[in-house]
Length: 410
Image (cartoon, rainbow, N blue to C red; front, side, top):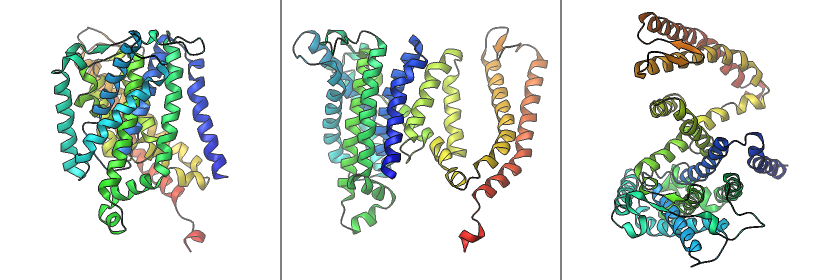
């Protein structure tokens, strides 16, 4: 029964990847899908480090970037007929270089976890990022390196000229990578990674080397990060120093944390959220990075287990059949919360906009008018008051939905 349930989930996941372009097939939508595919693999690989192995890395972009650079150079070699094989294997090329880099760096960086590991990863990341501007012959300097995926041999008549063709290729690799990363969590090494994360001393007592377990997880994470880098190279056909630096490492950290560390679906959720913010929100507001920072701050304060953890919190209520009792309390608190968010966004946008009128949610707000500010602040204050007023009811409904019946308690 459990096997059938898991098989159904994986089949649904694969179908979702395949049919997604059938619903929204514009150029922008396909571009966003490709970015999501890359981000999902990258974020899942980072979760193998931090979420499952307890290794906080500030340099995970190294393996992503190195995989991408070698993938682009492989495209160049295909173009000049130095090598001959289909570009569908380009992500695997990136994975191999990511694995080799992880083997070398992990040989000395995984002896310790915690602050020591974090500082070593930060140093390695900055070292490789700086080296990319020095060794121009391989990294291309600030301009980076570019290739052309269309010179590869066609696969069943597909020449990968269109972005939608690249999406289906990326979707296949996303599914394969997701399956193997999940299977890794079910192996003894994956199980012991959780034990080493929680209590390395006890793992040592029962005969496991904490350093070796961390090393295995580190290498696996580097391999899949390289695959994500290869997908990036295929999609954009170029790669630069930006794909190696701390900013890229910070983004994948945000994806994993906002989505939910420790939950396998968490990085997938985080990758989708951040990709949408990066691709859509950035088109409407120059303050999208500020909103991303606020989202991360609110997640740390109120959802420390991420969005996936918030979803999983409702498992008990779902099993007990009391999930419906939370609908009205959530609605009563959620509507004022949404109004508060929209009001705060309006205040931020009015303080930043240089035009005379702000077009916001079908309204025309004039930042130069005091009345506009007063009304917006009043709406925000009233919404905050309504939230505080409805929170006790939500809290009581939550406790009732998750309360243990006396029969079960006995």
